[in-house]
Length: 612
Image 1 (cartoon, rainbow, N blue to C red):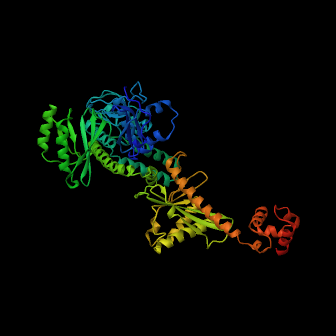
Image 2 (image 1 turned 45 degrees about the vertical axis):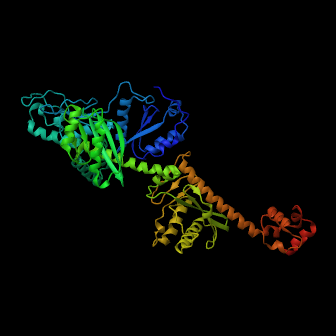
């Protein structure tokens, strides 16, 4: 591959990717695909290439060539897994590991071209007049479902060459245990057997309600009878059934060539997403933006796109899948058929594989429009860590303002609280506030946190201009206890919208993020930029509280009974306090101990003893 070498791939490449399941394609400067990968969360996975120091030299080498990252969103991780496999086979990327035996995912095949169809697992799907279901990713579950399927729908699994009548074979064990109706010995005619085959095909097509319902009822009945071992078996079977039927929309056994079109619109702009399916496999996507498109009449924009796109298209597929009906369907079909040289159909699917693909195309178009909007946000300097934190907490609104709270005290003396502010990812020092604890006696951090939160929002409720800006998120320094204390304080403001402000707590021990309503904390990697941002904000709240705490402590120490003693000035007072630690210790000190303090002569020591 001839590519121009780059010092480094630009980190901005990952910022606008959606954080959903899908497949990403890394491309070199000549447009060639050099790596294909899958991800449960696209942005998080791709960002790791830029944020982590890879232990693999090959990855580091690859990233020098990456100049563009494309992606295709899928509905599930399973779909992403198989789409990744298809794209690797299609593009043969330089940096992907490619299996020499071209291993395929398994299908379930029902031989509907035989008088008495059978079912079996195969890894090779052909256009041979039989029915294939899959591909399936979970092979073990697929085998288990095939085994369990025959309990509900007794279909044969043997390879005997049966005819419509006159079969004289000897029935096997499956017949005796009720897993086959015995067509090999003419125990069932073809018409009745065909009903079983139809039910099997319906089940494998996704209509599993009847089987799932029966399994659930059997599991619950066994549990009520205290037969937990049997209930567990039904539970495992139910899990296998639900897992194994999770197929995907990226692959089919037909040799069809299809263009699947999705569209989404915002105000005066629309995005058209085109998925290219070749030989039954989704291999590529393209997207286009249409200006001056009216969201109320998307069919008009779609009609214009089809006319313009296929005017110069090199290849026209047999089927063009649309999200909605358009005008002049017959005219367009005839025009496309002439360009292709054979019949072309425009199809608006209502159900099945094509409907799922079309929905996927529209979802990709919607995400692209969102990405287009987010690019404006990123270019305006908003910290990407704020966007990730918003997604991590599943919040609807951007985190423009975050307030962090901390408590600082020395035993039960000089207790203070602090509030520091982050606005658009930057410290807003003019918005910092500090609180001297008034109502709490003793060392009770939880009660102190409640007092600080209560006073802060009471001032906001009174429309105090120093507190009238509300945060999009509150960060509490501490663990579950401090978080519960803050929640308790906010309950007092249930009548206002203050109680709806989201909050989190960051515990110092292992940097866990606690979220109200969730039993388990969020734990981020140590090198995660979002964690670093939260840590910096927490540490700033701690610094601000400590600074205020020291200030009032020093002020308290500057006025004491020592000021009343003759010849004891600021320096001698400071020396005494540093040496003994408190007025009480100075009072109990002997004359010799007082003389041991640097700068304290006998006359001053005697005065101290006399006055104290």
